[in-house]
Image 1 (tube, rainbow, N blue to C red):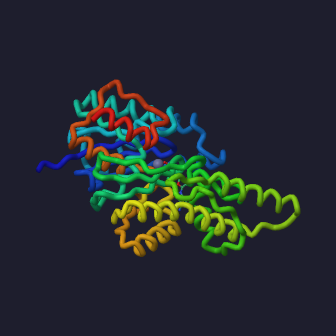
Image 2: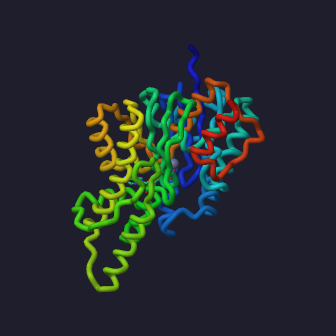
Image 3: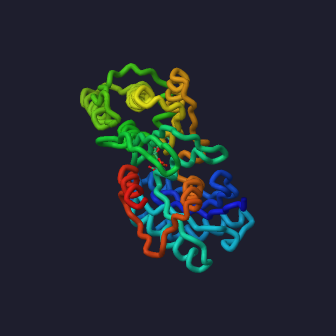
Amino acid sequence: MKDVIILAIETSCDETSMAIVKNGNSVLAMTVLTQMDTHANFGGVVPEIASRMHTENITMVLEDTLKKAQMTVQDVDAIAVTYAPGLLGSLLVGVECAKVLSMVYHKPLIAVNHTMGHIFANAIDSHMVYPCLALIVSGGHTDLVQMNSADDILFLGSTIDDAVGEVYDKVARVLGLKYPGGPNVDRLSKEGEATYSLPKPMTKSTYDFSFSGLKSAVINLVHNEEQRGNEIRKADLARSFQDAAVDELKRKVEFAYQQTNIKEMILAGGVSANQFLRSAIEELSHQYGVHFHVPDYQYCTDNAAMIGAAAYILYQKGKFADFHLDAQSNVDIKAYVEQMKKHD
Ligand code: KG4
Ligand code: ZN
């Protein structure tokens, strides 16, 4: 069979990324230009600045990616782009760039949902095995789905309030750690012990997650201690928080293992770079005889290679977009699954 080469573009948040991916699993070249240091000055992503920086950098990222692969746009079979969900202004930069390339070079256009991209990061240098369970944990999403095949997805549950990555970032901020907070909380927690008692979410026997109670408890604890003039043992608090957050994720995965009897599990999204979470799910999977897979670190946080991997499935099915493609800020995985059912 002829190789399929896809040029993929990702600009949904604060990374301008492009990649050239062969057959959905082999990354020929990838560039990720992060704006993290700029946004760190503001304690979080500033949408207006993010889209402006994407506009400034996207041509350079394209040139760099093509150079690494020693290719021209002419050499690829399709152009893929993240169209949703994310920051509207940021998404638009990628979508318009993809449309122009598709039009000028007469290449088919593929619209990829960012969350599906995170899932298919697991196909890179590997392959997906179905049926599988997928836990997607990022700055904007916390979802659990069952995948019977690449495009037959059953939505199981999602967060009813905050996404876990968002809570990591808030906790980091209250502990005085730099944005993005997740990796910093993760690092600090390794030096501490879980000596603070934090509430456990009350979402038993459902697939829904909840993190806002935990977030408020940490924020209130810090404020109360500060008011009393007590010193906070930051590493211990980071560890206590991380234990509670990971426990909530683990409990839902365990519930899915018991309910479905599926023997494949994948982790995806920025928070899947968390070593503690990886180990917890790995250990749980071992207990249940489930095969566990997680992407390589560089494919956990936002990157275009995962978009190329997800686009390959759509390419094979002939699901192409046209020039009416528009960026959409809020097509979460539940909405995406419903849309797919309608179109089939
Ligand atoms: O997937 P991603 O790059 O962007 C979104 O689609 O949201 O995820 C970013 C999130 C941020 O909230 C960041 O703090 C978190 O992933 N994150 C981590 C770690 N690395 C990144 N959270 C916990 N531990 C980590 N090691
Ligand atoms: Zn993401």
